[in-house]
Length: 593
Image 1 (cartoon, one colour):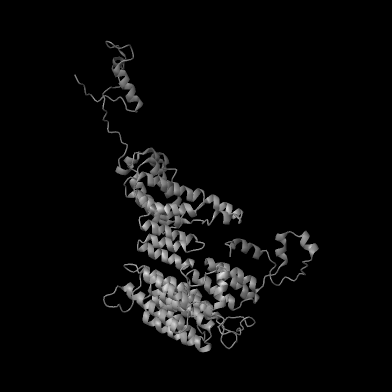
Image 2 (tube, one colour):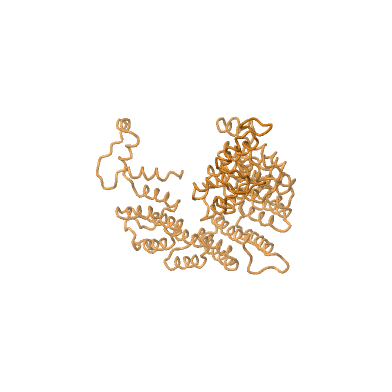
């Protein structure tokens, strides 16, 4: 859970394997004399131990390690339905869908409680619950196919579940509805919603069961309001997005008719959809929140309990941090900075997401100065450090937010767009602060923002400090995850711009920042301009001055000339100049007289 999978593996391997019969004495006298790391050798792993380590492998997609561990579990008789579900998750995370299907084929528990194919008879008992033991694994596979764009395969999993007697649950329906909606199959998605509603409420019509259907409706709304979606039928005279927003509002009304309460996620999705209309429909979004605030209000006792505990995380309200953040984004798209500020000020304790939203709204509205003021008001490394060390200092210093890379990307991008030297210097200072104070490293978006500004020219790009900054950013980018060839493409673009630049920063730091060509020695001996033009260093024999290497020439240059001391003639000085440049004394044969 904390990213120390290798450490977990080591501890697991240090435990006593199953089958070793030794008496374990964990009395106080023993634990005081045995080292902590030696205690693990006194312990024997059980099914839960194996499944816990298997879960860690599944999170990172280590399918090879997971299969080896599962094989060991099968040999020791520790395989159960949780093992099957976790192993399928590992395969799906690694995008090994065929392996996931094979696991389900061999280890699906039958609904009558008997031994499934390949399952251990001792551990394949069906739990007495409404869900099939392996429904989680099938849902994981279905969702994996859906998110990878293989909708037909996802539908095939649903058919396979029906064939094997694995009843879908609300999570299965949620994944399937979302996949259909994202792929513009809105009719099929709505039919699936109707079927899921009837199926789930048929067993129990309690309010708790109705609440479990809210995520399924949210999946439909999220799917049709994604930026690349369009409805099967588009209303006449309306844009595709506007038609989808109308259908989303109809779904919310249908939820209320079925007494299925919209939650904060529902409202946030609708606000975002209304905010992306052209023009943004911010007033309708605000009215919608105020309407749902009263229609979805919890029971009176629960409502006042939320007020007393100052917890509105799950209540629909304009002061809810997620809803207020969505309103800030909508007002930002409308360039209504005053309303965005009002929404931000409604939040009792804003977080970094809300801060990023208000900074983006300011920058969109051309209020960069206001954005920097808000940044200075809520971001202070010193206050944040004191806040960590002394929680009592929070009340004195006010709300201090730890920024992230999005915070700095928003401000740096806006500053660089001004294309002025002062703004560029401020952007460089913010970049240094981000790395040196907060230990935040750039992502690919920030790197591309800076490199694009540099390559586009303007007042930023060819001053020594600008070049130094660009090379530093490019060096930082080398540690990021890029698609194949993308980093080399950017490095080549920077080289093509800087190679003709006469700045000494470029010439001196070319090797330091890893921009040299493969043949380092050749690159070091050649001027960047020669590299760019493809010129070589073959001596043409041409010299600006004559001279000669004969004794006669040497005697002549050393002879006194009227008005000049011995050895101090202008011609002698000229020969010294030639020697300093490495030019030779081959006689071209040309003489003035």
